[in-house]
Structures are given as C-alpha cells and as structure tokens.
Amino acid sequence: MVLIHFLSKNIFRPSINLTFRHINTKTVTLFNMVKYLTQEEATNIDVQLFNDYKFSVDQLMELAGLSCAHAIAKSYSKEQLSNKYIIVCCGPGNNGGDGLVCARHLKLFGYCTSVYYPKRTDKPLYHNLTHQCQEMNILIIDQLPNEADYDKYGLIVDALFGFSFKPPVRSNFVPVMDFMKCSKIPVISIDIPSGWDVEKGEPEEGGIKPEMLISLTAPKLCAKQFTEYQGTECCVLLKPN
Ligand SMILES: NC(=O)C1=CN([C@@H]2O[C@H](COP(=O)(O)OP(=O)(O)OC[C@H]3O[C@@H](n4cnc5c(N)ncnc54)[C@H](OP(=O)(O)O)[C@@H]3O)[C@@H](O)[C@H]2O)[C@H](O)CC1
Image (cartoon, rainbow, N blue to C red; front, side, top):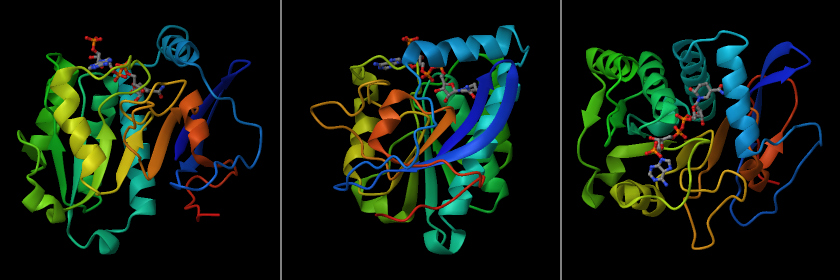
C-alpha cells in the first residue's frame, strides 16, 4: 500500500496508492503513471517538505502513521485477527516514529497492539511518542516473542528502516530481522521492506517478504517488486492475479 503525496509543479496533492506482494506471482504494473523514487529523490522531497513547505516532522509523521493505521485496518479486520496482537517493530529513525504513531492509532481503532522498540531514540519527539503509547496501555516489549508465543501475534508491522537505510543490516538489528523473516506471521512494511536496498529491492541472500507495503510520499524503486494499484480509491484490497 502506498500513501502518495505528489509534489509536482508546486502542487501538493495527497492521495493513496496500494501495493501488495504476491510471493511466487509475477509483478504486475497496471499503469505507468507512478513515479518510483530513487533514494536521493526521496530524501530531497523530505527536505523540500521541511524547508520549502515548512512542514514539521511531527506533522508529517502523524499523517504517515495515521495513514498506515487506516491502511492496515482496512486490509486486516479485527475479526480476522481475532484478538491476536499486532506487533509494531520500530527502528531508530523517522520510519520508527511512523511506527509509534501507527501503533497508537491502531490501538485507538481497537486492535490489540504491542511495540518492540530495541534502539530508542533520545529526542523529545520520540520520548513523547513512546510516552503516548505507554499512556494508551500499548504493551512495549523489550524482548522479541519466543517461538512458543508466535500464535499470540497476528501481524507484524515493520517500521524498522525507511528510505535512509544503507545495507547491510548491522548486527544489533539481526535478531529482529530474523524474527520478521522466519516467524510466518504476515509482515506489513512501512515505506521500505526493512533490509531491502531502497532501489534494488530484496537482497540476493533473501530478505523479509512483506505481504503488504505502505509507501509514503511515492513508491521507491524497490516497490517495483510489488503488484500495484493506482486508482483513485484511498484504500483498496487487491486480490492475487
Ligand atoms: N515523506 C513522508 O511522508 C515522511 C516519511 N517519513 C518516514 O521517514 C523515513 C525516513 O526516515 P529517516 O529518519 O531518514 O531514516 P530511516 O528511518 O530510514 O532510518 C534511519 C536510521 O536507521 C539507521 N540505519 C541505517 N542503515 C542501517 C543499517 N544498515 N543497519 C542498522 N541501522 C541502520 C540509521 O543509523 P545511522 O547510525 O546510520 O544514523 C538511522 O538511525 C521514511 O522512510 C518514512 O517512513 C517521516 O515520518 C516524515 C514523513
């Protein structure tokens, strides 16, 4: 799934676009309208949003996290998850911040939500986002679930790394990457599937295989490995071809 904020000719146009990955099926692009961003272009758009359009990071993060929560709720109903937990894995950058916001809104929507946040960022915004999660009784776990507990979880939200990720994954994040790779719980990635090269996609040695990707601003080149929807509906569930 993709949340798009097109920035073109000074027009700031928000819309939503969705991508799903169907493992073992061919990647299908329905239209050729979408612009896939390089890593540098994605960074530059963010800089433009902050410097030229005077958005604050809190504003953009709240929009991003809320949009992700909406997209997830639309695609995975509470009934479908039958009281299983959604575990949101948050990284040290803004992608992790999107995850914390997303967790808060998922909880507000009535989902059982927990957060795994192994490397907390020592900045007021992140302290506040973490505090808000705690105040909303979102379970913040310090340990990854044991295999015996996997069936308590219905979904993993991957908010570890976004468009600033540079491979390879450093050793302190290997356990959470392995958890997302091996647990068989469906993974939803925010903006970039963590561990993937932002432009080249899944690493040759094999990476996480998210069931759904939520791109922010516009899809990055790695999203070409997903089936894509580019209509005008804000949020649409695509069926496998
Ligand atoms: N455009 C929008 O609408 C918005 C998008 N947002 C989200 O922000 C991310 C990009 O955030 P950014 O903070 O620039 O970066 P990341 O979250 O991708 O990650 C940076 C942190 O990750 C560490 N890192 C990088 N590579 C590795 C690695 N190989 N192993 C371990 N750790 C890694 C990096 O560490 P450094 O020591 O290198 O600094 C950072 O700590 C975007 O994708 C969206 O999700 C915003 O919310 C704004 C709105």
